[in-house]
Each structure stands twice: as C-alpha cells, then as structure tokens.
Image (cartoon, rainbow, N blue to C red; front, side, top):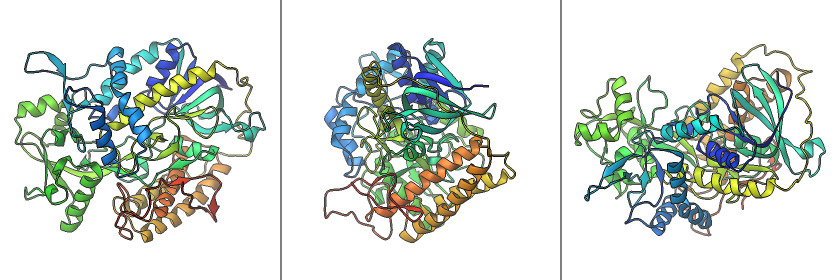
Length: 548
C-alpha cells in the first residue's frame, strides 16, 4: 500500500495532451508520473475519428485556417490564441509523424503518395489529416508504446486524482502554489499524496454530465472541478458542443459518426429521404457544428422524430469501406449497412469549449499548475469549436507547456516535502451506494432536459435548484464515508454542472453553442465578452455573476 510518491511532474490524464506532454518532458530528462483513471489510453482522444486540422495542403494557408476558426467561434475566439495554435499546427503534426503515427495517404495526379486530407464542417479547405476514421486510436496507441518503454515515465493506471494540494491550505510557502495531488488507487481503495514540482491537468471535458454523449465514461470534468476548488478561474463553460451525428441505436453506446462522413458528401435527411440542411444554412451539411446540431434538434422536435438520417449511399461501397472502415464495421454490427441504407443519428454532448483559464503555455492562476487540452480555456474555440481543432490544441499546448515547464523546473523554486497523509479516521464504509448511482442518473437526465441544445432561463433555474440539492447530499456523503471513484466523479460532475448552469444564466444572448429562447439574438451593443467565474464569489449556495 502506497504512502506517498514524489515526481518532477505529475500529469493527470492520459489522452493526446497528457501523453505528448509526458514524452516531451521525459525526453528532456524529467521524471514524470502519469495518472490514468482506467487503462492508459482510455479517454476521449482514443475515440477521435476525424483527425487533426492543420495547414498541410499546397492550396491552404494559415490565414484561411485562422479565418475559419474565427468564423466558427462566433466572435469570441481570442485572436492571439488562434494565431499561435494554427501556426504551430504543421510542426506538431510532423512531430507525431516522427513518433511513428501512420496517417492515411493517397496517390495524387502525379502518382506521388501524399497524405490524404479531408474536409469537415466549417473548413474552407481540405486540411484534416487522419488515420482512416480512427485517428485517435492510431495516435494514442503509438504514443502509449513509447510512454510505457520510457525509463523516465511512471504510469499509474487505475488511479484517480481526488483533489489538488494547495500550499496555502497547508500553510506552506509560497502559499499560492500547487504541491501535487491526493490520489485514489481504485484497485486497493486507498488514498495517498503525490508531491510534484509541477502538476498538469489533462483530464478532458465534462460531457458525461449529459444523458446522451459521444464521450467515454472518463469524461467527468475532474480537472475543471479540482482547479476550481483550488482557486482557479474558469471561463465560457456555457458553450457545450453537441456533435450533430451520434449513432442512434439502443445498444450503440456513445458511438460517433465522424464529421468526415459529411465532409465526403453524406446528406442529412428526414425519414422520407428529404434533405433539410439547406433550409437552415447555405453551407448545408458543412455548416459549423452548432448550426447543424440545432437544425437536427429543430427537425426532430417539429416532426416528433426520434432521429434523423445520414445518407452516403450515393458513394460507391468501395469508397465508403476505404474511407470509413471503423464506422462501416460498427454500423454493420447493429444491422446497418451504410453503403445501402442511411444511418440513424441524433446530436449528443461532445466537447466542453470552456474550461480552466490559462495562458498559451497552459499556466493557470495557481503557481505550479498547468491545464492543457479540453479541460483548459485558451480562447481558441470561442463560442463554438471548429471541427478537428481539438487534437490540434492538445498537441500545441503540450509542446508550449513542456517548454515552459522545462524552463521553470530547473530553478529550485521549492523543495519537495512530505505531504500529510489522507485522513480517514472519522469516516466509515458507505451504507447506501445506491444514493450515488441515483444522483448520477438524476444529474444527467435534468442536464439533458434543461441545459441542452436549446435553453430557457426557467429551465436553467430548475437545473440550478436540483444541483443545489445534489451538492448538499454529496457533501454529506463525502464527509462521512470512505470515498470511491464513483463518488469522486459524481462530485466533480455536479460541480462542473453548476458552473455550466451559472455561466449560461450569465449570458443574456444567444451566441454559438449557447442558444436561449429568452434571448434569441446576439447582443451587439458592445464587444463580445467571455463569461469568467471566480472562486469565492457566491450568492447563497450559488455562484455570483462575474464577467471579464
């Protein structure tokens, strides 16, 4: 049974952001400890189908990619972040290639074997490099093998962070510094501290707070919740991206139909075969995700349909099988042959556009704490993420964070000290685990019903009241009983859900992914503002509105 660990860098999360950062730091000679809640690669990155957006084509340009990103972001993208990340995209993609990732290739008109670039919604050019329709799996598996073989990297699978350790709470100097984290070994059900010079949150988003999601069970907002409790600001959490096309089937849990299918010509149709996207946006199926998701939601509610359909049957079976082998095989397992019949699809919670506020090196408000990937907020995505910019951000921020950590960690800012053990002297084994499962189910249901694609102030207030009740129950449970991974994840999901609801209530307009019937138009009276929430600003049991 572990009593404590020390590490130069503690990386919490093992998706593309966490693994690529860890490799870069280890290659620079630093001792890295990676926490993975389940198996090393079991996160959202593994399931990314589409690819990585980067300027790699001869007819593409940085200006075009920047323009497409700004357009999709509906006025809230930070132009410095967009410029920084887009311009560093190609070099980071080539870094992945150097690590051994095999992206899809095709013969051009001159018979040369080049990378195949696809086009997705919101992009003006083909710029998404991919490994067929399983890019995340190809990237994660390649990096995993290198991480496991590296002598400087320690991997702790089946471990979940409970909370960050703030120096101020331990009366250490400097007070506003992260010293590491308390960690639960889910196999031994034992909590112990890990002290680290630098701590990195790469835990992904919080889409598991919704009943229907394309994300795996690990997407429970852990990093956002822990950073908030440690004193970090968060921003723009009202912007939850719903992917337009998740497979609709009673047994198809969380299976995404890649945007690349629409990029290669698939049409969205109603049960009678009639298309509808041109009635909602002149770009049709290639409109940004927020527009497509709302259009599908509108048509389903207008007609009372359970789903709509994605039709690519006009393409040859050979084309479909070559470009989308994973999707084709998975659909066949449910009796759907996408070469002969349309795929039933519905929107599902997919990506958390807001997160912990950072600079372009991933630094947060707390010294020694970095956040990268989906759990962070750089300003790249604005009010709506452009397709395949997510893995791009993971790569670029991992690189810039590794450089910053490498520069700062060499200076002995403080000595690693023995952290106090986790105190379980006043708690007992849980008496009714069913309370946790019922609260989990209730949260995901009312978040879907009240804080979904279309919102109202009344619905948001209802969700807020229910969250308050859940907070009270979870707090009592957390104080009196031994914790487990289900309770930790539920505690984090409820916390992030409260932040999402408060952020949505603060925004008195409809913009990007946030659409409310009470304020259906853009607020054009002033420059668009981010929604920034600051820890410690509460009204009663809820967060006070704070804008920046």
